[in-house]
Image 1 (cartoon, rainbow, N blue to C red):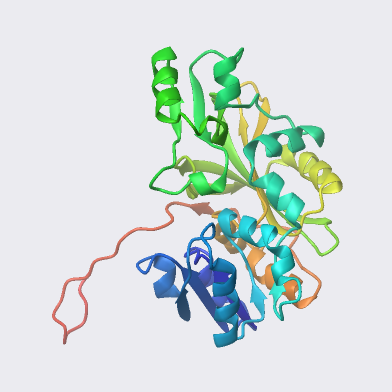
Image 2: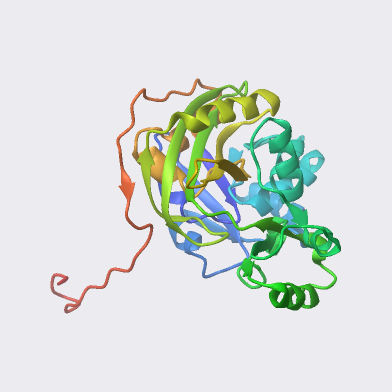
Length: 328
C-alpha cells in the first residue's frame, strides 16, 4: 500500500512506514524545510489548502505517483477534503477520514462544544469573542484561542490568557474584524488528559486509552505524558460514538478540576500527536488505520504497557572526524 499524507505530518510518517504492508509514504507540503519532507519517501509541493489550485495539485500528484490511500492527518487537510468531497468522489484512491459533517463539527470550536454537550459530555461555557464582548460572559481571567484550524498556524495563532479588562480591550482592538474567528472560555485549572479512542468501520468503539498530559504547549501536540488506567472517560466516549458516526483514530481532550469535575475541551477526528505513544503502549492506531483502509478487522490488546513519554523530540550531536567513528 502506498499512502499519501497531504500536508506532511512528521510524527505520523515513521510509524506508518513501519506498518507491515505499507510500501511507501509520500507527502505534500508548502514548506520545503518541514520535517516531513526529510522523513517521507517522496515529497511534492502543494499550495496551502485554502489557496486556489490545491485540488488540482492533489490530482496531479496522483497522476505522477499512483497512491492507494489519501490519509489527512491535519485539521486543515480534513476540512479541505470534507469541503471538496464531491471533487474526489470518483477518484481512484481511498480517502481515509470521517464524514464531512463530523469534520466540520470537530474543526469549529463553537459547533464542537454544542455537539459534545448534545451528546451528554460536560463542556465549558464558550463564546465567540464578539459574543463575549457583548456580554454577559465570565469575568477575567479567561482564555482566548482560535475557533478554526486556518487561524492556528504559527504565524498568526492567538492563544492568550486575558487577565483583566485591559487585556480584553487590547485583544478586541487587535482582532477587530475577526472577533467571530476566536472563542473565549473560562480558565480551567486542573489535570489535562488525552483520551485516544479508535472506531471500526461501523463506528463502534474498539479501544479507549487515557493519557495523563505532563507537558504540552497551547494549540500544539503533547510533549510529555503517561498511559494511565482511568475508567472515568469510557462512558463519555461511547455516548459520543453512539450519537456521531466516527471513523478510525479519534481523541478527546479533557481537563479534570481538583474537585473532580470533567470538562471536555477538544476533539480530534484523526491520528493525533498522542498516537505514537498509544501505539507504542500496544494499541497500535497506525496498524489498525491501515487495516481499516484495507477493509480488514481491527485488533487491539486487552492490556497496555504503562509507558511514559518523557519527551517527543530532542537534538543529538556527535563530535568526531568524518573518517572515524562518531563520539557521543
